[in-house]
Amino acid sequence: MNYHLPHYRMSLTASDHSVRHIRRIVRSLLDDWELTHLTDALELGVSELVTNVVRHVPDRRCSIAVLRLASSVRVEVTDGSAQVPLPLLGLVLDQEAEGGRGLALLDAVVDKWGVSPGVLGGKTVWFECGESPQATRRSPSGVRW
Image (cartoon, helix red, strand yellow):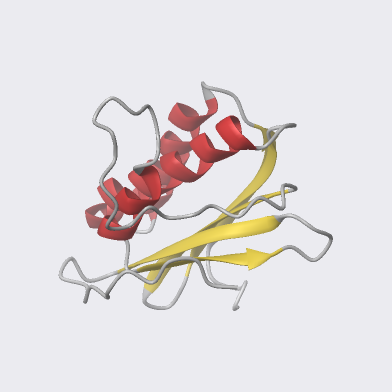
């Protein structure tokens, strides 16, 4: 990974209010990088990943990286939980269910995503969106280690 390209990193204890602030940061970065056509996908993606930290990581601590790559933007959310998010792709969910749709939504709006094991435990959930508004979609890939 080339870290000489523009990037943003932060560590936090996520709360219900964190998602809104992180979306603003992402929006500002994309504006600075003249990639505003990626705003909707990146905001939805980072919202889902941070919400998962709030809901599923006991201490709610995480770090977030937004990386400007040569032909895409990559978002990484790292936490200390070993619990791997499981996509419910293709499954019919109860219409009254409060959760379970997030990773399917993520899969629908980003070019690729996955999960990497953390060096000291935990995991990093990441996704990438390409520069082209007509980025080539790929078939659902699920969780990759």
